[in-house]
Image 1 (tube, rainbow, N blue to C red):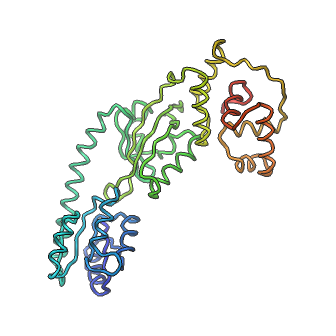
Image 2: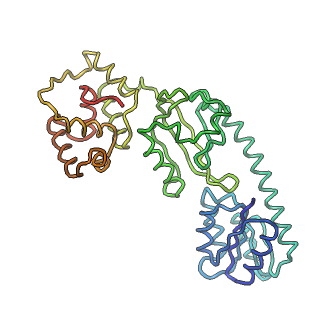
Image 3: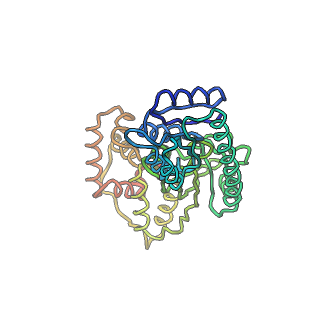
Length: 355
């Protein structure tokens, strides 16, 4: 069912339009001024917007201009309501990106006809664009997906080959099911920030799980758009080549980046640690001259799992201050300057278990 947003400061005009459109079966949202209209457009992502030009505060031209600059509202059909004397405003509005205008007082049939034409034209454009877009994505060398409400509505061949899910299987699962649990909170936060408009896009390393629960280390990119009135994430990923980590310095940098993002150490890092540990020219061969208490080992394990002080506190039923004390002792015992060095040292010297 199509959603329409009415932005009109005049109560009589606004209520008349709302009643007429609801009788036609549309879902109608109404705003009494430009500021409220902008917020509602970004929140509800309607299929079409009808907006008066002359309003107190932000007028219709300003509303149109602002929404045209936002990726998730720029393609929404926009119809102006205007008086006969505002022809100069009409020209400016159409130049700003509006699709049509209706003069007041308007005829009921003219209103419904204009809305129907715009919605039908917009739907044809969407279908044509989606068809061409999917052909382009299907042949991409990167794994590409389209996600709405945590569900994958499209995934290309590379995506299926990498994660081993069939097209029938992938549309039935929640996208979060393919994210490694150690990366899940970080991933959720990135999606939330994007959907909330805090960030327009995101790019980071994370860990997928294929159908057989094998870890796939990827560099992921995604951004927010609007498809059929719904907030939509379009993203792509490329598998990380662990061969790019050629020495201890590269390994330390990789571990630091993962810890800074509060993510769990993935398999390829452990594999590289084992590789370097078996190579006399690259390993550090440090002789441990200290012992860790049982509690220090527990805290260290959780630190390496990417948990914060408060999360460790909850896990071990101890105070945050006690956790901070244990972390300070661990830094001192291992002669580490920061948490990244502590994690790197601990993994290299088998002080923690791989989760």
